[in-house]
Image 1 (cartoon, rainbow, N blue to C red):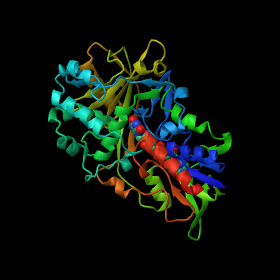
Image 2: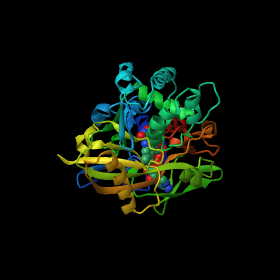
Image 3: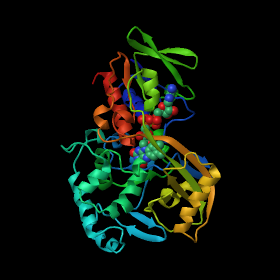
Image 4: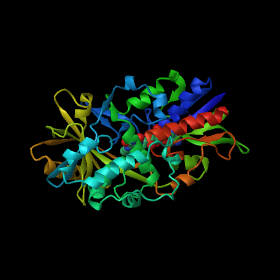
Length: 414
Ligand SMILES: Cc1cc2nc3c(=O)[nH]c(=O)nc-3n(C[C@H](O)[C@H](O)[C@H](O)COP(=O)(O)OP(=O)(O)OC[C@H]3O[C@@H](n4cnc5c(N)ncnc54)[C@H](O)[C@@H]3O)c2cc1C
């Protein structure tokens, strides 16, 4: 059986890996010059620049089936967060797993005792659960994360100081209008494992997946322009000026491209971020993520990523990722300047030298309440055509890999 997969993101690569393991011939057509889709790492002057600040949760149930953790040499973030409100700094230790941590961080003022007790209770409540947010029902009607947190009794101050910037960073949505199912799934992943990056950058994840495939299975710089149809059936793709035939075609692009190529309804809205990279003289924030609790935050979250893995910066040098959820249309000099304003306010002693900027308007498909019932399935009504991608599950590394796995099983008839 010959299967063409369109897109070498995590969904497409996982799909190709499963098909290859099961003896099918999988050929991946990728529009860009590398594998990984939204999960790639660039190198500049010895600094590793992930395309946007992304992390991996070791508890992701699907991805752990396909990844060799040891080879990825995961480096672990410290749990909790450093919360900045102007010059005021609070260190939130590990509210999810270490009740003892309640005592010292109680002094912080960012969370009161009830908030800490509630978050421990909430983490216990979401265990165990499903393999992705799509299955994460709790018997109640879906709501926004904000409503769910309010119903769970959290104080507005804790919501503003912790949940907004933290989930702003994870779900690229500081307003907390994302589905509470996504929130619960993410909370469970946080509670069950560690938050990590591969020692040599997030791009190592897709590279490892691709390494399971024969060398000629992935065709880079090969955008698919159209699907080939015979009557109702999809029989291949049109790419690089040629027809390529297949027994099945799996569309593993981002949702809008899949929608255009297939004519299938897909989620259209998205959320994104701008990631600003600076060399720094050092923040002293250790391996914790820094969160901006200010109401009019420009930088939402930041991290001295070279503290987490020394490979992210040349020896004796330090790298900061600073993320803003605004400013997509600002010129580079203004982005750099506004980022430095926030960071210097928090760390007046530190220096910040611009390295690069990456604007990512399409970071994740938008996941408002109720979205999961409306997501497309892998199987389409068109014979020979299967969909894969985060948008059939949830926007995450785990969700996209689950979708790739299911798409392969669909084609194999498993
Ligand atoms: C800034 C940011 C932060 C994130 N943070 C996290 C996080 O912390 N943790 C987490 O789990 N997830 C995170 N995510 C989400 C996660 O990265 C995505 O859900 C996942 O990578 C999507 O994979 P995919 O394979 O579905 O799609 P994509 O990665 O978009 O892959 C689609 C591929 O299709 C290719 N393509 C498109 N059109 C064509 C065409 N016509 N022909 C051939 N190829 C084509 C594209 O070039 C691309 O390689 C984040 C995403 C971003 C962008």
